[in-house]
Amino acid sequence: MNKIMKYPIYTLLLGGILFSCQEDVDTNNFGLPTSVAKFSVTEASSREGSGNQQVRVYLDKSQEGNTLIDFSVGGNITLASNLQSGDVRLLTESPLLIPAGETEAFIEFDLLEDTDFESEAEILSISLTSIVEGNARISTVDAERIYQHHIDENEYELRLKWDQNSSSNMDLVVELPNNQVLLSENTNEVERVVMSNVDQNTPYLVSVWYSEGSVAVDYEILYQKAGSESELLQTGQFAANEANEEFSLTSGNGTHQYKLTRLDTELMLIPR
Ligand SMILES: [Ca+2]
Ligand SMILES: [Ca+2]
Ligand SMILES: [Ca+2]
Image (cartoon, rainbow, N blue to C red; front, top):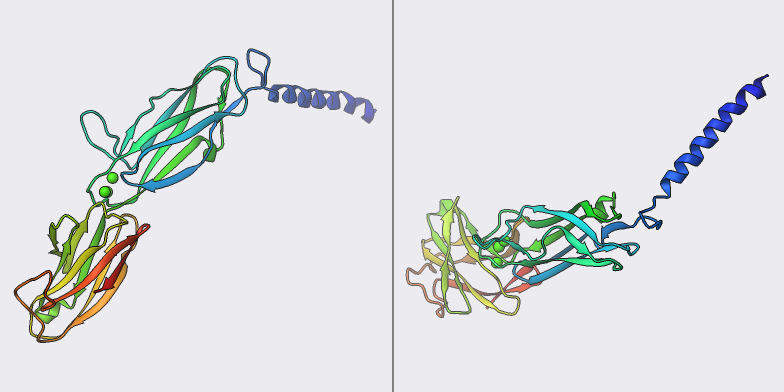
């Protein structure tokens, strides 16, 4: 009796499994398996101002018709337009076309230069959102559907710290390759100067200037870039009799001089 009762239930279950299997063999209008649209990489990074970049979107099988893919652009960046400057200029408009019979297309953009010391590390994010035309579908895997491009900042803030109770005054002076000179400003008891578009192949002259005081003072030179902790570059000390109201880029009197260079994304400071 039990066996007879169970048989129809088993048949129903088996039928259900077969039916759902058939549904999984997704086909398009041409009887071919459906293709999945995705990015070929999840993320990349390059320097601010490094210009033209592209990311590849591909289908795992070519389609007999065109595939049009809508995408959206986000992240903590400003898109440049004809009316405003920004961090990124998008060169490919949504929707992206993968022509019939082909398996790939590229979303292109320019990473633009600026002289802003960004408050946080910049990320451009591009997401494939929907298929506007064609039988492909978008990958449901986030790492294949969302692409992130990290922008390495080339602005750095140099900082000079010393004991503010010592009634002494110091400044940071940076000489740029075009002979322009930057003088630090004091905010929150730290002397700060922002260096823009720091070039990897150029040494910069950095001077610590002990302009007023009559005591020996220890100091620290640090730097910070967007999205990173501040890093100690050098420590130093002026003797009590070293203060000098007159600044000179060449005389050592009242100044300690360093050569600053950028190695990849890090700064280095070497006493001269
Ligand atoms: Ca920027
Ligand atoms: Ca910047
Ligand atoms: Ca810059």
